[in-house]
Amino acid sequence: MLRQFLPADVPSQMEGTFIEHFDRATGGSGRLMLFAGDQKVEHLNNDFFGPQIPAEDNDPEHLFKIASHADIGVFATQFGLITRYGRDYADVPYLVKLNAKTNLVPYTDEDPYSQQWLEVEDVVRFKASSGLSIVGVGYTVYLGGIHEHSMLREAARIVHEAHRNGLLAVLWIYPKGPYVKDEHDAHLIAGAAGVGACLGADFVKLKVPYLNGTFDPKLLQEATEAAGRTGVLCEGGDKIDEAAFLAQLHEQIHIGGSRGNGTGRNIHQRPFREAVKMANAIYAVTVRNASVEEALEIASG
Image (cartoon, rainbow, N blue to C red; front, side, top):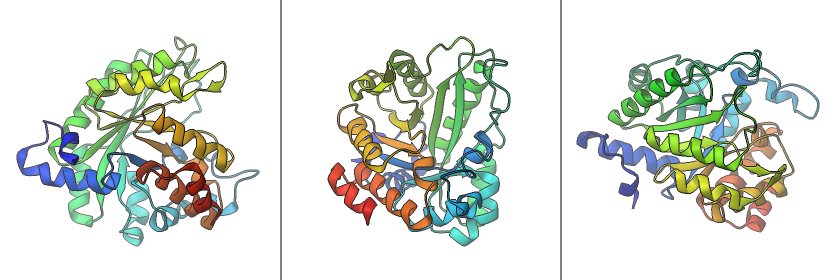
């Protein structure tokens, strides 16, 4: 079944490697539960220290402990963090995020540009020398500014180089900047999904569409259709009640047609044991087709 997800730019000698990586990341389901741990750059320390956030979340190792003990598809984070903690958590399936930028410069003041930090070949060499389970790479594209052409070129090359080496390629695609009036507009998000497909991504992580501030899973259908054979992942967003989050996730998949999620704060902004249970619940809905009720039982422990 997984061969339907095999891109044609994966060389014949790497097809088995790609399918092995895809199978591990998706649990054989074709859906991806991505545990996002890249916000320490994107949001600085705002997501890891403050009211209602457990003290342990300020330590980067908290992320690795969760990834090691919970059911996840991949743990997406920066290369440097993996080099510092990866040996102690060698069982984790990693996705290396190849770019990142802080939020210090407002998007309304300057068009965003998140330049590539490392080459795919750097990741491939590290994978071979470290023996860690690196199954893919990720990259963020911001559409709508004067730098989008540079990011689109970098993204296209990253996707192709990843596939040549049997790795998955996941793109975060977010329209931002002074020309973007509503980041959660369903039609605009569908456009971003189509860009991800044109870049050849295996999965594209998108904003959740809203209408007048309200989520309607039917709004997601335009994006999942526009993405074609590229799987749509919905961002997790701010931490919310477990029941509300899991219900939305279930609707995104079974009504909206998404093929997974990229969740950070709704997992790691909890004490370790609660975070593991929440990750397990998200994985159960995403990969194992669990109902919301079954997932809530897992989350409650």
